[in-house]
Image 1 (cartoon, helix red, strand yellow):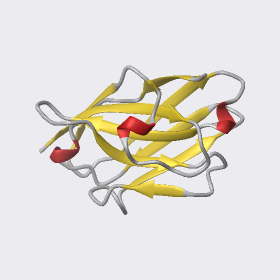
Image 2 (spheres, rainbow, N blue to C red; image 1 turned 45 degrees about the vertical axis):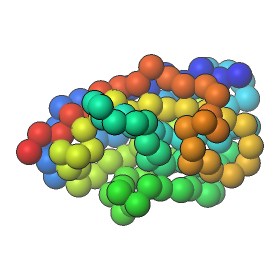
Image 3 (cartoon, rainbow, N blue to C red; image 1 turned 30 degrees about the vertical axis):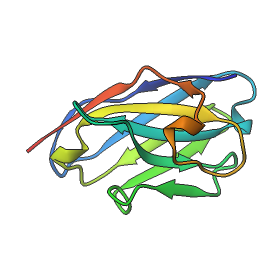
Length: 124
C-alpha cells in the first residue's frame, strides 16, 4: 500500500506554470499506476492525468492535453504534474492517487489510495 502526499499548490496568474509533486511512501511505488485528479467547488472530482508503472504510457483529459505533463521518478517514489499555460478554469484542489494494475486508469473509482490534496488557484 502507498500513501500519496501532494505538494506544490499555489496562487498563480493565468498563463503561468506550476509543478505539483506527489511523494508516495512504500517500497513498491513502482508497482502502482498513479493519477492526478482535481475538484473545483461545487463540482465532481474529475480526471486530469495518469501514468503507467514504468512511466512509458500516459493519459490526459482533453481539457489539459498539450498543457499538462505527468511524469514519475520511481527512484524518488514521486510523481509530478507540470502545468503550463494555466487558465482560471484550472482552479481546483488537485489530488494524487494510486492504484494497482499496469496501464493508466481514468476513473476515480479505480483508485484506492488518495492524498489530502493541494490547492491550485489561477487568477485572471
